[in-house]
Image (cartoon, rainbow, N blue to C red; front, side, top):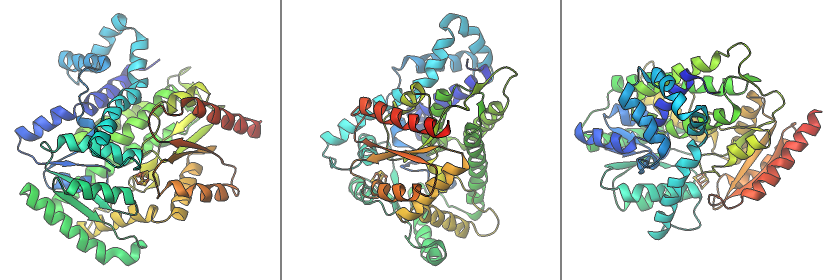
Length: 438
Ligand code: SF4
């Protein structure tokens, strides 16, 4: 059973998530520049420049989704404040199952639109051997060029990212954050210089100045968002949880994407996450779900894209799935707010790059987060075309010999490609974990 309070906050997030087109219209009306965000890195800079950041896949046409039509109807009829009353009122008419469907179908609905973007990218000549995530990015940005004023890009170790940003820069302005791939202490000066160039570009595009104070203000609210996000991850790892395990994983899937642009509204995003995490902490007497005999797996990695049925497959086989890329990549680490904000921000960017500067560090990060959340195994998402993270598989296997963690390698190229194989592989892995624990 999904509690009304949780449902209210989840619906708020869902409505806001699928309102990318409306958010673009608001940006146009208020004369704000729109910056496409492929990753959450740099989102505070964009807000500090008075622009609207948007994860391009949220701009799709979601108006025909039946659950969204109902969710919007709620909002229009009852507004945010009376949404709980609205849910109570409509529950007898649409049934409790409808609400569970709304949540549990979240990822599958979203990925239906992703298929359209992938086809679009391929028809427009995107490289077919690129990873799913980068093809998706091209497919989502290209049709929106007239609505977006620039894209935030990253000079990182990922060669497909570099290629994609090169392609985008031929068609529209690109604000490239060059992050030196060196240990944090050595790269500070280079990073500060590079950051100043980024700020200068953002200022020229938006016509606004990024001051120490405007950046501090955005970092303060972003830090609160990160704190709430981390609490939601921590609650996930408990043995007794308030939500059905599948619903919880779907919430993590939503947050993973929503965090990229704070749903265009940091204040709203922060308040809703705060209410959500407080609600998740309160488990009614005789309520909640005992997950003590459900093996827990962490997904490595989610940001390159993954099969949308994974959470459902895991749930049917009696397991639970953790999606925690942003914590692994240190994007959820709070940024210092005292003193010079450019220096503070530069050091956060270096931390991000340092978390995956080489595969040995990346493997350590995933294993450390797996142990923090008491996870039993690694679901290794071997993403076709990825020459950066996928080759870390061998290293994972070696490192795991020193731990109790088990690993299963699941390939991923396109949605729905290997559904049956996934079920077999994950099923065998969960059996192995259960035998070890018996
Ligand atoms: S999956 Fe690999 S190739 Fe794709 S964006 Fe991530 S690191 Fe780059």
